[in-house]
Length: 179
Image (cartoon, rainbow, N blue to C red; front, side, top):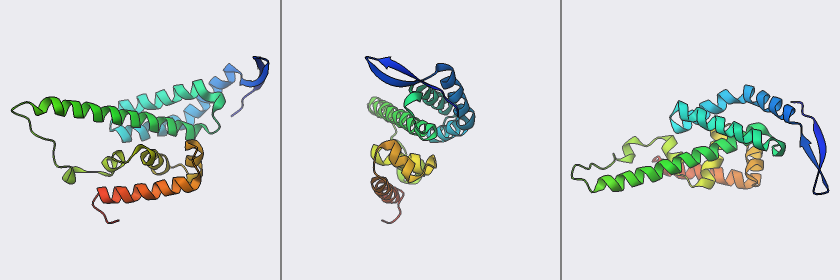
């Protein structure tokens, strides 16, 4: 990826900036290489191809705006997409809870099915706390190495490894495995 940098003065301080044309070309190059996989990854996470494409597109729009600050576009994109997916899951959880509260007052209300018979790995990942969920999504689902995940989340590699260990134990307990 070729980018040209220029020096601009902002408030008397020299700041390196990237030429707008080169940013568009660089983001297009990243888009051509990573969009399909990112969109597929997010579509699987949210179980909706259209929403997955929307999330991937939003991640690329954010990349375009923040490109000058991004060192590793692939890792950055997956981190942003994971955060957007997490926001989606939170919203769905709030909507489901509100709907259930609304429907609970009705005479013909039937409770949700027993999760023990319908739980999947995706559900187990969704039940993880945010700090563990993002690490799992980036490492196992986006296939990023521990070092890259640590750098993106601004954590040490040891912390990321510990989070992965904790996440695996929690998911095993959730899915009925042994600790």
